[in-house]
Image (spheres, rainbow, N blue to C red):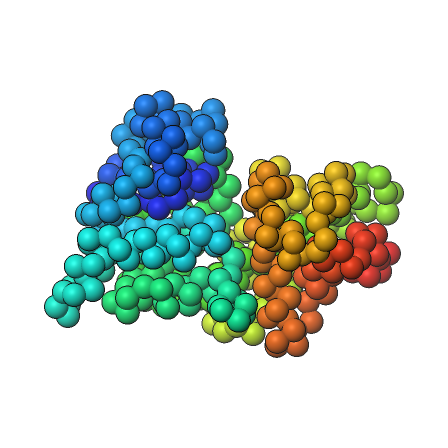
Length: 356
């Protein structure tokens, strides 16, 4: 059994921490808010993000990152992309990472797992993959320890112990295998991959497609033109756009897109009632949620006002930058960008995408 640190007290980080604890590992969860830690430690519940789910009594939480990271064999970053740079910087300041920076060559960094989905923009606003951005934020000795973790894995179901499949992807095959073995249990099946680019692209762009799917799902309730067949058309076309972007950014294995990381994660994100991005698409139709925003920049800057985190909004803005730079044909992503930027309505978008 191993010592594992989870940095991030949201739903997914908490769910994975619970799963690992049940599997016999010693797990410490870092959360910024002391109230979250107190509730987990005293009531065995993350009241804000996983209400009603009883967590293992052995799972401990602390707002002290240095304490949480001190002896961990695996550190898992489980924060949204907008907070990743800040959390990585805090991790760098912990005594453990300070010692590793100055230690003699040969001192091994802990494995660093990454649950964060999306892209990280540079100072010019050009998006980069999560592992590339972390490479610039972490010491060089940590680069070979990075493992990206993804797959169809809604936090509520993982926390409830439902059977789930994940992908652990890394440029370092031994790191991927080690994380695979640490995460694996009777209820969580994990597979290793070397296509760290493809897996990350799937994880980021599927959230964009899920917003479009939510739009269609809501519109189907009031239109005889849309049904299950139509939704499958959109899902297949969305997968094609994910693959287009993945190939452009350097994906090495075509089968990534038909694996758990690709079609598996896309399907559950689009169809599940737990999906926040699908919900956001539905709210555009049913609640006019975009009416309060002047465009996508305004929406991104005020996204917390929505009340839940639809990461596909931010990802859509970044995909548009990549598509413009590389002249990629991604009509669903481009059309959704136009909707979020208040340039186009949902009806026009569906007519263009589906030929309706």
